Length: 151
View: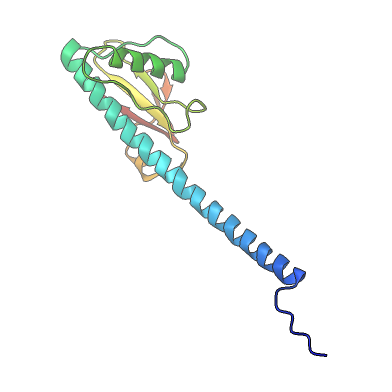
């Protein structure tokens, strides 16, 4: 008797499914670092956009906005409300890609002639951290992995 059955055995199917599962897990792990770096690049671009808004505000008011003490999220929300309601053409200010779990921070100097913006980067080895401000600025901890710009 000749057996002409075509197809795969259960064992062969399980091996193929296992291999596909392992390969997809490796790909997902590799992609997470790309997503992390992408979010960090967006954070740095968001800082520049917020700086542009602050400079427009300064040009109109000859001072930077003041925010009340509180959490970073509440200070950033207050800054957003101030800038979007200032009549300078801004309709929104960027938020952290992982908001509300993470937030940008803003603090003005006592003279309202300077400020600091801080964002926490996910990649502590990001090359942008070599060119930012470090230490405590206006009460904000700017040590790495915080990316801070001061004006």
